[in-house]
Every structure is written in structure tokens, then in C-alpha cells.
Length: 215
Image 1: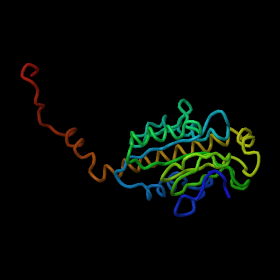
Image 2: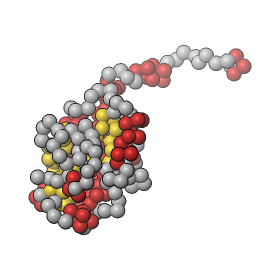
Image 3: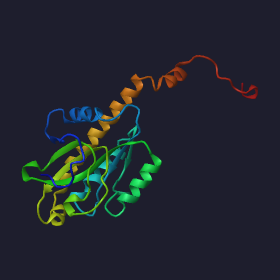
Image 4: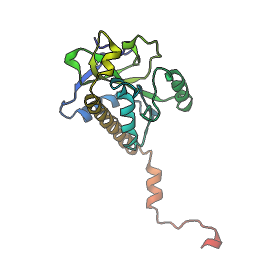
């Protein structure tokens, strides 16, 4: 059993290998099945850059910020990480700012040796810090967990000795998936007519109602 989350979900998570064909589109399509149309979407990336293995969350958040997402709010970056010390406070701030948001939680995970370098995407809340025996609040309506190393013993040392190259590959793929989710949200909203008023304004040939002294 992978050790960084508990079963707060309704179905077992789906495991994706990094070399899975069409991984980005497949994972994004699966995630979109759980995101209600028109809902504010927030991604919370959990972890700290003080530990290589635990840096998956803030590294993913930083890469997402560089993608200039249109519809998804990202919290937890290398500049402003969300970790065990400030998680409860940050969750309260996010809930205040986005009271009805659909939350996607992202964190590193320890598991079986044969599963290292895979992503778990599942419905429900992720329990951060479970591998380190930390009592932190469950987070998210949907989660992505990247298995960065072997769990079972000396978890702190294992996270510290995790290869940055592996974490970087996982973070890039997570960023790609969230970018594709953002693209699909944008496409849905355009098709539903949410932006139709903007299209009318941009294409109108009627003169602007300017003040007389400006005409």
C-alpha cells in the first residue's frame, strides 16, 4: 500500500506510468469527469523544497504558474510553499477566498519499489504527511500523488535521498496534466456560451458612444 494518503475516496485511484501513451490527455479527461461545470477550481501543491522527495508539490506548483493557467488557481510554489507547518492556515485562507471551489491536491507519496515514478489520480481527499505520522487535515476533492521513493521505514531519510531527476519528471507531467485540464475547462466554457458576450463586443461594427468632446 502506498503510504502518503488514506482512503477518503469512493473508488481506488488510477495509477499512471510516466511513459503511458497519451498520458496527459487521458489523465485530464478522467479528472474532468469529477469537476463540476462552472466551478471555481483550485490546485493546492503540498510539500517543501527542504527535502528533495517532498519538493514534488511546490515544484509542480511553480511549473504551473509558469504556464499562465486561465481558469485554475494555484497555491503552493517554491517561493510560497504549503507544508505541514502552515497547511491549516493556508487552507483557511484559500477557503475564505474561494468558498465553493473544487480542490485538487498534489503531494509526493511513498510506496512499493515497483511503483516508484508513477502517478496516482483519485477521487476524494489526500492526507498529507501520513508517511511521516503527521496529523494534518485531509485536503482536496480530487488528488494527484506522485510516488517518489520506497515507503515502510526511515521515511524522512528516504525522502531526503530521493533523486531530483525523478521528482522533476513527475512535476513536469503533473504540470502538463493540469494545463490540459485548464484547456478543457476553457473549451467547455466557450462551448457553453460563457464568453459569447465578449465575442459580440469584439466583432461589433457599431460606433462607440464617446463623449462629444472626444469625437
